[in-house]
Image (cartoon, rainbow, N blue to C red; front, side):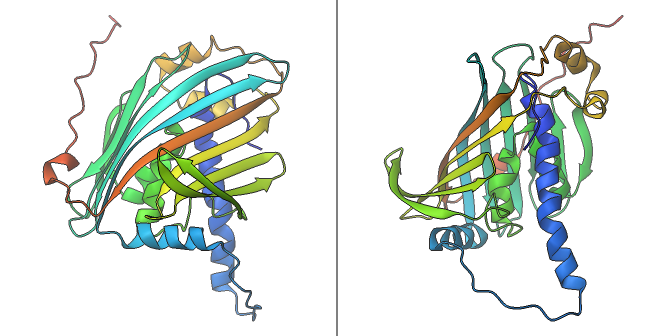
Length: 285
């Protein structure tokens, strides 16, 4: 299961998201290059997941706002958090416009931060992170993958479906239908998947086939934050993380994400612009 450190969850989740992507893509590459015959198996994907994949991969445009909440609970009782991520996604298939930006607010230890990916038309994207500021333009897929860690996968979950790169946010898991529930007045189908001590639940709109809510829970052994991850962080963040308690006590992490999706509504081209706020004055002499 993913190893996280209380108060630094967004940093270590970068390794989790990248690891999941590699784990799910590698087998597909191996199959594509082998000449050995393989037995065809029936598609057991629940219909709501297939309908969701089709809806996102074929929509004319898409926009959403959402909120992710992170909570950590020690096995012996104390709760840490919650931390919150607010995000917005904009997408226009014909124009090639795309924008994803988010802001994260921590319950303690680390100051709020913000990041964005944007472009007006096909081609490279601009990226910005308040902890590292403007970065060189890069490929969209690389930017989405890179931001997957600091945004706790919110930069990946929906965009991967919009561009047809993944049929759902957790393609490595096998889901089953658990019944019907309502999320923010939207009738939904509830699906769940388990993998060892990991639980993932998705709520998909019955009318629009939109992803309405995600929930994920797993258990952590409480190991310290990887030194390589810390070394790649800005000095300001490293200094703050030095204050975070890293006792080996096991704990459970819960992520809950709610989406407010809108399909096929005209998006004003000006909304694909993002202007980074001025950098704060340096405190160093």
